[in-house]
Amino acid sequence: MALALKPFRTVEFRAILRITIVGLTTRLFALPWAETVNGDALSRIHLASAWARSPHWISADIWPPLHTYVTGASLWLLPWPFVTPVVLNILFSIGTALGLWVFTRREFGAKSFASGQGLGEIVVAEHESASRFVAIAFLLLPLVFRNSLMALSEPLYLFLLSLVLVFLAQARRASGRLDQAMLAGLFLTLAAAVRYEVWPLIPVMALPLWRKPGFALAFGLVALAFPLCWMASSQIQFGDPLYVLNFQSADTAKVLARYGGMTPTKQVVRSLFFPMTLFFGMTAGVLGLSLLGVWRSFREQAVSLVWLAPFGVLLGLLFYKSISGTLNLDERYSLALAFLLLPYSAVGLQGLGRMHLSQKPLGQAALPTPWVKWFRRLTLLSIFPLGYVLYLAEPLTATWLQGISRSPAQQIAPIPRLNPPTRSLIDLVARHRTREALMVWGFDANQVAHQVIFYQHLLEPEQLTLSHSLLPHQQETLQHRFLSRHATGLLLVEIAEYPELPSLDAPPTVIRFDRFSLELSPMATDGSGLLYRFRRL
Image (cartoon, rainbow, N blue to C red; front, top):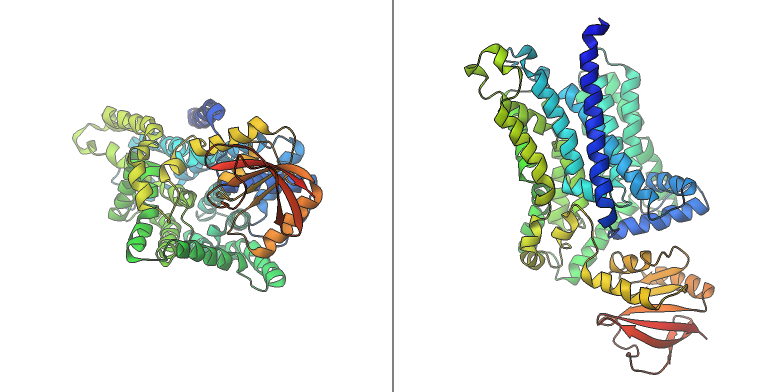
């Protein structure tokens, strides 16, 4: 018995090793060129650093708390805010790929098809190859690769979702146990403590357990634990159990109103946003194989179709909120869609490998045909360069998406890089700053301003960003706290937003800022921003 199992275990070990090596080597190679460019990633580093300095219980906030806890704990152990969160996300991404590999091997093999076609052991080799393809493709997808190199919450969220799928796949078997269903629910409620997109998926994630209603009920009750507690805390603190979701919808509506509101043209463009993000973020080859797998699953009435339900619900929800103007369009929201659709690429690959089975002797069909093997390799090799293809159409997409979304080329490119205007501002400050505190007024407070401050190695409370989008009471609190701490420092101002401030050749000028009087001395400019030295009087 041991001798019979040994080759199978060798195959498993080699697959795990291969997936891990691909995930590590590609990211370590890209790491020297990768830069943290996402405003949310910068904010999460600030939050996690503050939590590491003073750990506390988060009862209600804009973001669910688990990512802050995990990243904050890692920074408490290894206090390197520029490195630790990225290394953590690289490990989460590799763990997610391994989880997808385990899940795909169990749920998307020949046994998941009702027809079976008498294939028996013929498909073992191609099924193993297809399962590895899913894991390696996940690691190389532009959206996944990019987000694993920044301190974003998606890698942790997808890692937890992969564990949900693994334990659900175990629980739904005839030999499945109740504790496996409850573990799946536990990992799902933890995922809900990272991202809000999980919440509407909880009911449909129970569908694979439809033959075991007791298991499904236990799974659902455990999975609802965090959403119910968080809504209760939001009701107590804000007077609205869905405060954050309603706030974000209202904020998106305000942004749209500044650009002329919702129009039929914008509705059409917004409705295409996530399908097109999937096309470029997964690349044509991987997405095509996944859709082929979905079609083949429908044609053969595969029991694995039940795993398509979460994808359909999430896509429908994103589509509705896009055309209704209640969702801030972000390419990162497509990550869960790609994650849920990707296992079907294994079915697509296996379908290609069986195209000529009926024309070959049984013994010759035990391995995938050579052209399928080369197609699989070329698809994987093409993923990375295809992640940059949108740069060819960047002027056109910038026109189409004005007031709707940021440049998709910059948001999908596998290696995140600062754009030239932002780098110019960063260099401007770096040339003149020594150890002073820094304020930034204007620009995009969630992107450019955060990036300028982050690359000065500044953390709270040494920095302040102000934007016209902030609420008045938020501005007043931030201003008072910052200027009470710092009598002198540097101020970087967006010239277009604050034309009334003194120009570069002006003498030191006193301005009134909230309850404070500040003396501003112009220092330097790069054309879009003007740098002052401020002194509190």
